[in-house]
Length: 492
Image (cartoon, rainbow, N blue to C red; front, side):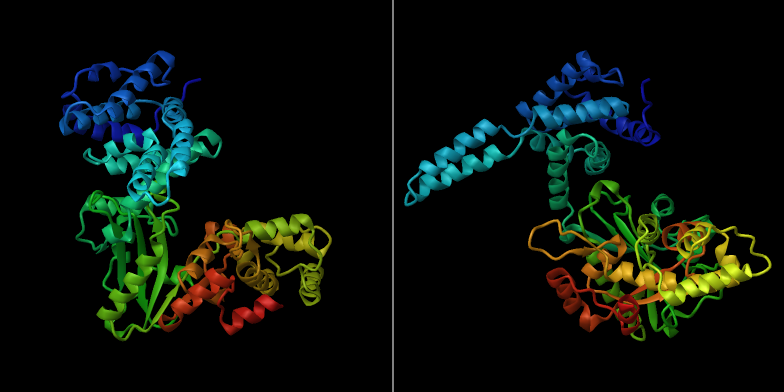
């Protein structure tokens, strides 16, 4: 059964289709790529192939090149999931690097006299040209179109998803990542403060892209933009209508440990001039197609600098962060029956809880054995509402979470580099020079918070005079900077 074109692509087809139609009409043969079968069967694939060849032929001037790229882009947007997958596979397989040419230029380079600098430079240039796949030259042509860079960002998002199942697409995906990384260099990005007076379309995208704590309404968003709150986003000059990544900040007294209190719309606003702490409580990457292109660390550093300048009394910079991988890790440990996962004192408390039946309102049925009981208790979404159960779980869950954050590692991607921590949010902040400061019991009692981390949240502290030292310790030696309390918990 044919797949339907996704709503997102329908929207872009309506927007960009009209925007690019007039450009595409300037080149002969544009009609050949109209009314394609969305599945892209072979007859239509030949038309796409001819369109790609026309783009690469570079006939005519700049106007003709833009028209051909617009025609091909409109054709891509008209396809369904299956058709776009075939389009991308054609681009990946048939317009890749010519390996025979690379071998020939490499052999020619090796044969050049090392003292003949003119010949050596010419041979090196030929080899560089041979290493550039035709598909990369084709992709660059889309950047000249209105909103072309956003088109490529969305194309890479789709490509990343498809490449997980299709190895033939991975080379193209890497090419696109490298191309976008060069265009989204930090030097090209602008840090903007987003306020209630920002364009409504931009604010709507903030609501859509918020990935940590859902923005439930316009009133909720307005509260997050109040005078004791700040929201900053990186924006690219060629995508001014789109945030790339954004951070939400609360100006408060002391390090916050509960997200519900932080986001309580009925809580009185604090005069930001009296605040001593900036809490980074949500960092959201808005563009899936830019995954793996890191500019979050620059975002935090620039926001810290701006806040320090605006509010001299603010001297503490901390996050209130989720721990998205903790429950998954813990569930695996329990499923494998890891010996010694629970300490004797923790097993004793759980046994006593089982014998007393918890409080009168606790009707949770638990299997025999403390590990089985522990597993059943945390699987019950109502456990935080039963005080005896929550008290019994607090010590083991907090201790195991400290172990997960500090001690549990994944193998390094590059040989010779230290292993990194399992949790992706922890890795992000440790890479940026923060330290693991404090665990917060039931800091997030939402269903998402319980499912991800048994309700625990963590503060990562950015101590300005330690950021570089912490970064080097983690990146260079694999050491996780921690507070004394976290270090003690992780050793238990």
